[in-house]
Length: 421
Ligand SMILES: Cc1cc2nc3c(=O)[nH]c(=O)nc-3n(C[C@H](O)[C@H](O)[C@H](O)COP(=O)(O)OP(=O)(O)OC[C@H]3O[C@@H](n4cnc5c(N)ncnc54)[C@H](O)[C@@H]3O)c2cc1C
Picture (cartoon, rainbow, N blue to C red):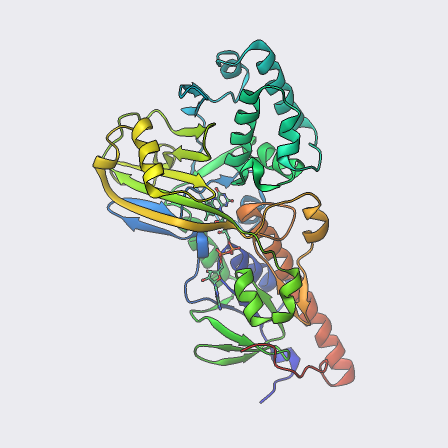
């Protein structure tokens, strides 16, 4: 039986960071019922407890001045943790571990030549106070004659964006993300599950109703079919992977990104580490990174958490060898491990002109809005939070305007054909 549009809820599909932000925002912006559907909430921001340690799905840092942190502050969701400010290193082209030049002192003490130090400091100043050109990162790096400066800048870009310099990402977008990283990042106490739990609590507190069910089909009349029921929605936010959007709404195809950014991650809970002072290490010879988040945040009741990442994908043995050279004996001291061979970090890179194409959360079909890490001018979870909040607002506005249309004409907009099942 069809209901009048005033009685219809806003339905948010997917309860990762994007869906949670969308549901909270939609509830705050309208008096509508808001239903949030997901059989496995938290998405890629979940963490799990193993052997006295908390493991995120790969190393995760919250950008203190980013969109997600701003959303959490706006909704009074308190997240604690610590900044990885000390023990930052990079492995140079001769395999030597050097302090990461993050300030004047570390730059002066680095093994770079005077000319290289000048080039690096002027490019970092440019990142800090200006905009880089909207050209691929690899083209920007080519303007530096020194291969050591290119390698170091490339590793820094990779650290903050997860995209290797060859991925075609815009130097301007990468520069903004580097600036955001320089303003501070936090490793979160209790892992990113604390963020998910805080958002879920805020959602329930403001009246969002959570349905632990996945959505199987959506009709063009906004009828939503879950594993347990059929719902008539007033507006919908899809905060799920592009591949699932494509299945539910085939007409969305041309809007969806095709090339995800992936990583291979090995996380360990270890008894102790031979070099606990080495908190974060970049490799300038290979796209790899290692960090010990438990040195900055409460993520292990005993021992330490070690997170290693191969940007793009790589074999487990490669990461194990890298860990052994930097923390000899750590593998033998591991109480538990998590291997993610090919996890999607983001569904698209920020290629040149990305912001022009994706700064709005699109309405992909009448009343259906999209949110996710591939939308908006921000990156990673900040893009999920920003596009989620925007989609929640748009869904609330749409339902409100449809209500007026319905009040004046006595009927909702004609919608008939089924879109996917
Ligand atoms: C290794 C790694 C490291 C990262 N590091 C950082 C970092 O340091 N900083 C940072 O800001 N970001 C980081 N990120 C990115 C961050 O984790 C993601 O941007 C963010 O978690 C994505 O949230 P989302 O809601 O857009 O998508 P997802 O988390 O993928 O959520 C989608 C949700 O949709 C649900 N779903 C799927 N199909 C259906 C259906 N049919 N019906 C209902 N629900 C459905 C899923 O269960 C899931 O919960 C990292 C990611 C990875 C993988």
